Image 1 (cartoon, rainbow, N blue to C red):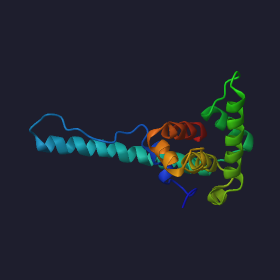
Image 2 (tube, rainbow, N blue to C red):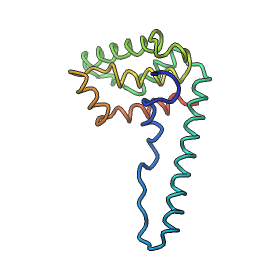
Image 3 (cartoon, rainbow, N blue to C red):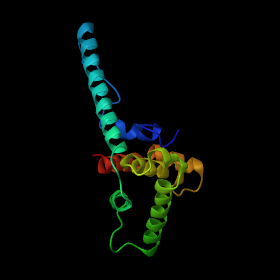
Image 4 (spheres, rainbow, N blue to C red):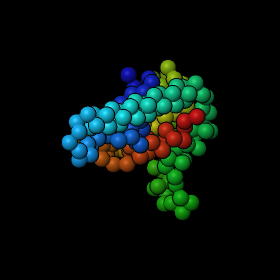
Length: 159
């Protein structure tokens, strides 16, 4: 269910700084190769445990609307000399994000927490950001900068 604990929305943040593959060194010693792979996997599990602890702290820490708006402004900065359209887009985005964090059913169980703020941002990126259609939005999530924005939001909201 969206908005509940580490979900598919958080996978990209969880793996943002981890290695998604392993390459064996050129050696004929299979035992050494297996040992190297075990060491790499151990680092991944340690990273996931660290991520889980950070998510739990976020669940236990309050987030005010003012703090949330500040995070949104840091994730999507608007320059002082931005066009009127850019400013209007930012206002619409903030309105949608405020709806998601305050009223969306997906945030009810975690309302008021920093984790809810993070989930509202990831939900916006995955389901609400403007796009010509759902396929275009999905492609943007998979190939665009949505992952970078999720990592930035996570880093800003973690405690």
